[in-house]
Image 1 (cartoon, rainbow, N blue to C red):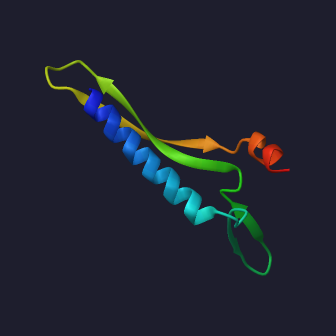
Image 2: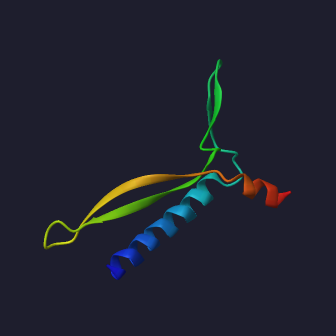
Length: 80
């Protein structure tokens, strides 16, 4: 179980790094057309994978889900 936790932490750290690198300074992913422009992901700090262990069998199994980390207003207050 400790090994799985360490690997999940590694994966989430990598995803956090890639998310920050991808969306740094962009104010969110922008897309638009003549009638509509929208900021996507500007209210999201990132995503992470969360796992839940199931112990109903002899073998350990996990259920995984992607969780959205909402944008924290604290970040914008600290940068001012």
